Amino acid sequence: MSATAEPAAQEPFNRRTLFWGIFASLLAAAGFFLLSTYAPDFRQPGNGGATPLSKSGVGYAGLAKWLRLTGETPAMARTEDDLGTDMLLIVTISPESDPAALDHILELRQDLDTLFVLPKWQTLPLEKHEGWKMKFGRLPDAVVNQWLGRIANAKIGVGQSTVQQLDIEGRLVAAPDELQWVADEHPIIAAGNDKAVLTEVDGKPFYILTDPDLINNAALGNPDKAAAALDLISRLQSGISPSRSNFKLPDPDQLGDAASENPDKRGRAQPVMFDLTLHGAGRKYDLAKLLVEPPFLALTLTILAAAALAFLHGLGRFGPPRAELRAIAFGKRALVDTTAMLLRRAGRLEELGGRYAALMRVRAGALLGAPHGLQGEALDHWLDSRDKDEVDGFTARAQAVGEAKNLTQMHEAAEQLHDWTARRLGERR
Image 1 (cartoon, rainbow, N blue to C red):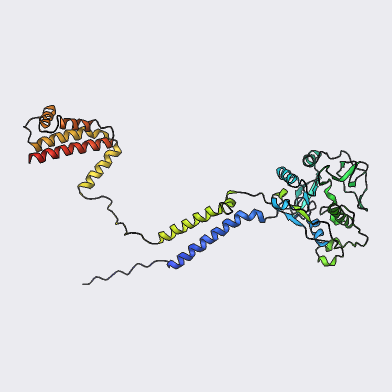
Image 2: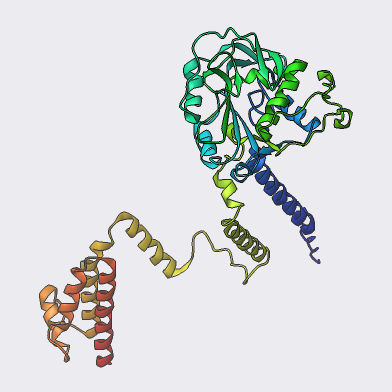
């Protein structure tokens, strides 16, 4: 009767399918890692706050769009390199801003025109409208003075201003509610005698707008304030009051229309740039970003290349497969190894030296033909007398085995004792 051959085992998946599956997984993991690392850089900082990207009432997205429709598109400073650009930089401060970031801006912009807009209102997110804010009161003067004191040696004025209108480059606009001002004998925009809403810092090209309600989104809802906001920016850009006699203000509801529909395309002395670094842009550094940017990018690529080579090397077998061993081996060697393992685990190996020496004494006496009945020291003397090369040869070796302090010494002494026995036995034969 012939035995039927068993069918060859089939692989559950094709190797090519496995390879492309692994490749797709690694590619997806790399893409997820990169997107997770750089996701904060793509998010708009300060959602709903006093930022040039915010559409809430205290934000300045309306001013950025208003400048784009009536002139050049304003730039956004997201990095330290952007802050060194020779443009009029508008820094909008919010209570949540980073003071260290403001100090860094002051250091980088020492000789460059910069407009600082102070915070004014306490706000809360409006639940029904994402990105909107609800104001519930003025910020304490102490909070505003902390920001103002970093820019200039001044403090917010105490008391309500009685001014009903402000003169902005010849245009009269209604004064904001609860007007915020500072004391200044030579104001750029006055809020009464020796009071300023827009002031210049002595010795530096820094300008401070104390009340943000002249240029924020809430202010641009008023046509006069929207026109006055452009006048204010143009005054800081060129230092000359522009002629606005032929200016026609479009409906604020139509600010999203094309800029070509707006007849005011006047040239400005320099473009405008809004700061985003104060609100968190460009300050997200972590270990993951260091791994994928120079100078550590080379190290990362080297590690990935080494891992890929190791993976490819592991796909093929190098060398014959190892035979599977029995759980319990046969033979004397297996018995000896098992016994040695048990003695090692029991901690009794150090006590075997003397016992091995006694066993070798009896064995050497039997092999060399010692008189019957000799034991102990008498047998040692008889064995020593068989050695023609040295005195007390056997005794010294047996004593060294018994006095061994570790396994290495015991192994060396046991080998010398075994060699002595084998040599004497060879001489007898």
